[in-house]
Length: 196
Ligand SMILES: [Zn+2]
Image 1: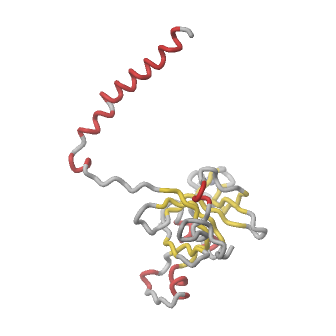
Image 2: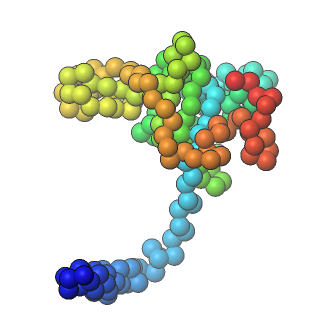
């Protein structure tokens, strides 16, 4: 081994050490109020399967009458009959805007946070008439950029279109996360009694 080969780790160790002294060390100088801030609950990516529907319709089917304040809110109904409200954020908002995404089978990759009943959608999969999985977003044909809600193109301000692309579930969903919520028993195992 040449000298240079083992000198490099020493240089890295020095750099990390300096970083801790001059960079990370600043964390301890934060104002007390900020330092005491509760850490955000760790999110876990989960796959949810079902249909996104209007909350008022889902409640009505259960014999629950809701007044106008709930109008327009959407929920994911899993195939075992559970309801999860959807946050209208950069990804979930499309379900509020676009009825083409509602009342159809979807798979949603969502951030699940302890104590938060709302689904924070990260990716949307729909299914075509043959049951083939389609990654679903919006697309500007002129600028070739994806978008995640109905709005003028970020670039040309023109129209975007709903886009469906054949795609498998991502590899980062491993183990139990690949089993859709709504198709499990209480122990987390897949349930054979659930509807497809
Ligand atoms: Zn464009």
